[in-house]
Image (cartoon, rainbow over all chains, first blue to last red; front, side, top):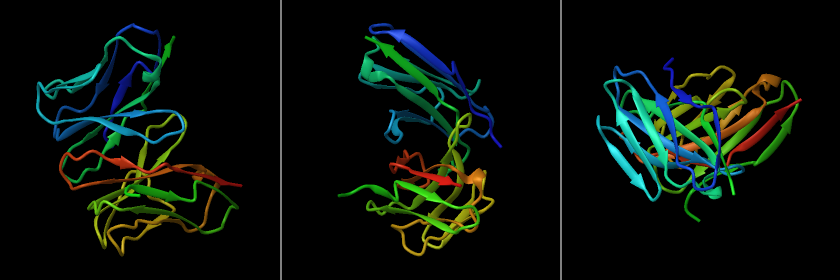
Length: 112
Length: 113
């Protein structure tokens, strides 16, 4: 069973603060790293799928980086807004079968 | 509407009963998945399917059965429900076995009494 670790477990920030989260995964047999955003009472929605070492992806105020050699990915949120409050999941797979292993998620709460 | 739908949204059943959770997608995605979500755990894969008539076990398959006779449907059956199967179940699909993101249904909250 692959281990995907996310930290911190939860984060409480003020509106306007920038935040970053870490996802750690096994560096051997890497295929892809996914980030999902999961709002309360909804289902997870994909943010990024990253495959190449050094990949950087951006969507609005949210960006992510990938280091496959050392087995980590960072997710950054610039200028957090209350609507960014959600659980952020990372998931990892080792092959083309889309069989993802998820981390436990990081719950972000942004105070207005 | 196009998308992935799960039914029912909520289900209460008794220990020992058989229950089937339904999942239907309209994208003709090849891959479909069943995950369960429990407090203290990430999403854990129960079963997945790469195509019609092709299924394989995930991390926690015991007590569950799946079938995929049609591309668009992927039902999950609990043959004899146990209290430990009380959980929120998510169905997901993805376009193919590359780096396509997963698209999730809205989940089914199952309570086994």
